[in-house]
Length: 188
Image (cartoon, rainbow, N blue to C red; front, side):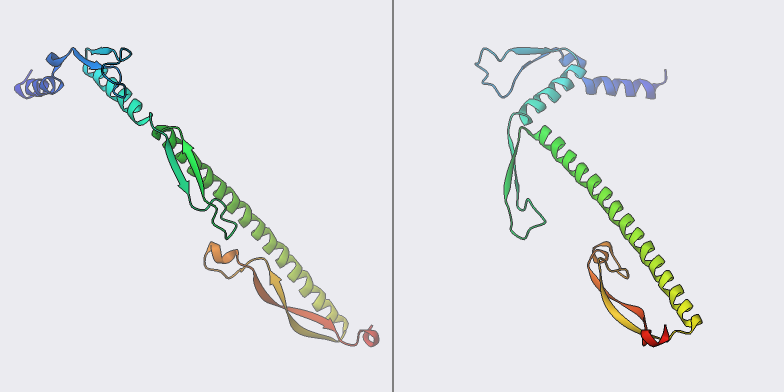
């Protein structure tokens, strides 16, 4: 072995300090040291020390209840309805909050996909109706019926020319060209 390799092994050995083991630590840090339930735990190696630290942190942070205050429970109403959620401990709280956020994100994506699909299909139906109306208008012109074209304002469920998704969902009014027959009794 060369000197560089041996030097690295020596530094690792000094860092791990195996001569400091075995160590003795209390099994619980949230219980009074004089309590007979709190026994002394023997730690023989560095991995045992790391596992002991993880267990102690879980005991320390998992011991306390976490309260989460929500300012507005129902976003569909204007009234602010406050609520308080009590979660058993920090680790479970983080997992619970993460799960809620994931569920909301997935639900939002599914809803957005459904809305966009409905809007697309509504647009296809509108296009088909416009095309059919145009063809009927051409047939009426070809047969020589007297017609007049005028515009009417109709309400739509969304704003097709919107720049973003929120504006797209806003109701709107659109002007549509309508073909009426003039003096239908005489021309028919």
